[in-house]
Length: 266
Image (cartoon, rainbow, N blue to C red):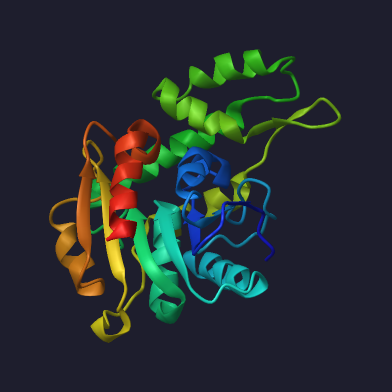
């Protein structure tokens, strides 16, 4: 699949993979600052942003898309940074093609299976509520973006989440609004998005530095997850961004960028 992307700056290649419901545009400010030293690629993963839609939405298919991106842009080796869904894609890719990874940065996600049923159900419910909120808006009856935003923000748990999701609402040439994410594919594959990665630990494969960044107020990476992470990425380093949740790159952007730059320069 040919993915949409934006390229910023020059230098060693750095590829950024967004999370579920996101796009490369969510990372523009971060990418712009990192582009002072790197050639930054902000990718829209399949079924998101301006990239094509597909009935398939698995980590396996997304890591294949990433390999195709490497090949089509003649990138031999790159720094990979992935958030949430993008982090799992990056982890899987790094195990399948470790020779293509210079450094790996994973933002607020673990490779784990959700063995704690309560945690799994909580995350699944959050995502199902988001999908329900998006689908419940009758775009055909809405006259203005302001009307849509007002109705939508009343259906989601907080304004920050709502504004993030509303970035997927676009007006087209026929003056009609449309959600640009593939709601059907995401809904159909949601359980697999929440599953753990099928990776067999092999420490001999991993010869690159790895950083896991966690938001202090997020429960996506717990203390007990670090053991599994260390089994897969033995030299992994951990950084916590204080006063941030699942989106530390947005909530505490300055601290996030400083942490990333420090790791990349080490």
